[in-house]
Image (cartoon, rainbow, N blue to C red; front, side):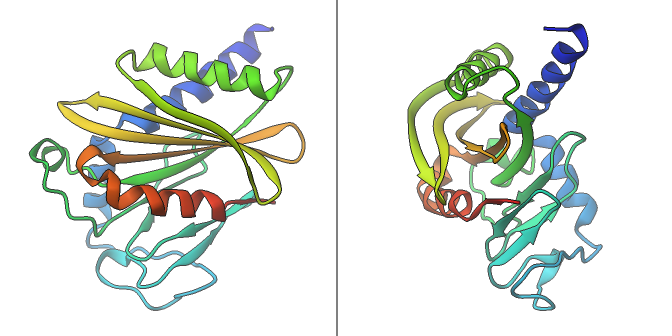
Length: 210
């Protein structure tokens, strides 16, 4: 591999891992947008928004390369460079003091990558190895291959302790149409996992690459 290719892929994975473990920047984004009445355009629920721009019914978020569901009460926030979209459960009730301290809310992000010369299986191994390098304490608890809208996808579930809080992480690697791949990362406080895991799966199943 060339040096430029390695630098590019390191950047992609660094961003990917950052999205898995940040909590402070989510709190910052929510605090920044709190009084701005931010909104986003979806296929449903347009103009029917509550405090902070949270949707009052499910919407479809349309981006250049994909579309995905934004559930009721969730809102899109500014995503870090290299991330295609970030959506936060703005109305979530957090009772864990460690999560309250960093103003954490459950969220998901979408980012884009390409397989290049790797097979899908090699890419999955690569992602897991890089995640372990950036977050050595992460524990993968379940994984499976499945079909999503007639395409190939891979699901990884993990436990992670970060900034004194316990998280549950769900990663979907969704194959695109031309050797590309979409990374969907979901992060929840462990004590809210049972409330979130079903809707996380529904969001992933709604994803459509264009």
